[in-house]
Amino acid sequence: HTQTQTTNPDSRTLQYPSFLIPGRELIKPQRTQNNQLNQNKLNTMSASGSSGGADPWAWLGLLKWTLAHQDGTKPSDLSPMSEEDKSFLEKVMKEGIIDEGERMRFILQEFSKSMEYYKSQVDGSNTGVEPPISPDAMEDLLQELRDIVEQVDYARAFVSLKGLQFLLGAITSSSGIPESIRNMCLGIIATVAQNNPPVQKELLELGAIKTLSDLFLKDDCPISTKTRIVQAISATVRNYDLTEGVFEQLPQAPLLMVEGLNPNPVITNESLRSKTLFFLKAFLTSDLSTVARANKF
Image (cartoon, rainbow, N blue to C red; front, side, top):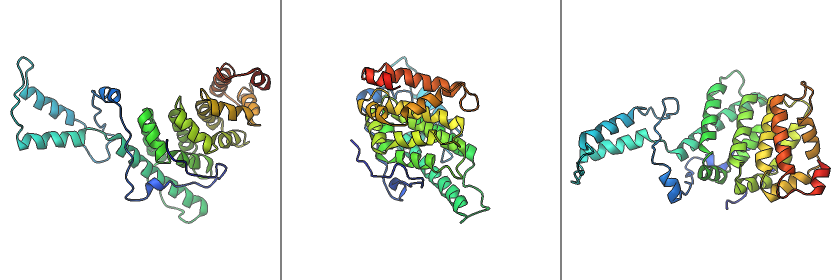
């Protein structure tokens, strides 16, 4: 399993991860044979997601080349490919296929630049300067990152890059960072933790459950952020004995549930109440649940 970097989970200072140091190689996730079989449908770059100006229609050239050399009615010509054909195929494969690992690294680098900008705005060292990337564009990149880490292999690679510390730092450093970006970070935590014990264990060791619970109970925490916090804590806690046990013993855990189910529209909304109720039901009906847990909550 991945090594754990010791951090202060209650710190409100953004921690910049070591993997962003220039020259550091991305740790590639290992894929099983079944995962490889599931990749038969190649992913082509979209125009919005391309970082190097790749042709989003590169696959069409590959299709035309294939049709020109094979009609499907007779065995293929197994003669060696010409150097020209090899160069063409290498170009298409390089420009038309997304390397999710490199793409993940690129997104995190862009995020680091944005966080440096927001940090400089708070301490007054760089006022009046435009951000390196707009909040809307940053949200789009974070959504792409969330899509990437939905795959278990990439979720664990993300953890090995110490990406969880990076997200928690951005979430807890609320000053100056747009609410929408912080909420996207919470959504990514929920995605990587969902039914993924190694990631849940890493979050537990980082003190994420207490950190997010404390943030939820702050008076100035927006409802939209509270909703994402409940989603992230729920994904971190559910279906893993260690995290369920820690959350059960957390003094503020019952209060979090009570506030999340509060019918007062000033305190909650339908989405927050729905996610809190789902979490509570799953927590109380877990195979690990006890009478003591039911009485407490």
